[in-house]
Length: 122
Length: 150
Image (cartoon, rainbow over all chains, first blue to last red; front, side):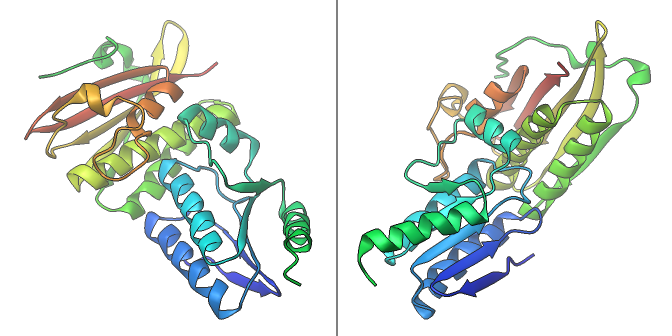
């Protein structure tokens, strides 16, 4: 199932709505990386509130999204990791090093707004 | 050579009334979603907490992905177990793939032959209460893990 990506200038917001297959995750990664260029986006929010499992593959893909989007000149923030999912990730040994996270969509937007102000690109 | 990191007999663990087992065929990454879902449903029906349920679902996901990545096809078997008045879930991930040449290496944090994070097996061992792996090069791999309700 494809993840809808909403363009809310200057950001892209991808809201995952149900459990995703590996192929869906990879296609989300590629779409976001491409659309950052097409819409000249400054930031990307990936909302994982609906995900009940973030295993090592999903975590690695979120990390890859963040790195690839950064290489394209934009910032990514992952929002909505649920408490029990966070617990399982830590137990599993997943750290999401160097990946920005925020509590929810609102905090994610605030994070990107702050980044944008500090970057002096506007 | 069968190698087990923790002794546990599955035959003894399953009381007859513990009942049915759920078998989920694993042939593609789409089946992972289904296997996780079945595990979550079973864990919830046994009264596992939300955190424990998520741990079980995460372990199933890692084991099922190993099947798809290395053996292409196999199955995940989910069983309710009752032992000494404790209730738990046993997950068996079985395939007839190439087997694991070096189990010690495969159990090492950060080791991967598929470009992954190398967290799969060591991670699963950490999040489950019991862990056993039997593998034979050329014959396949069976990983049996259990989680007890707290």
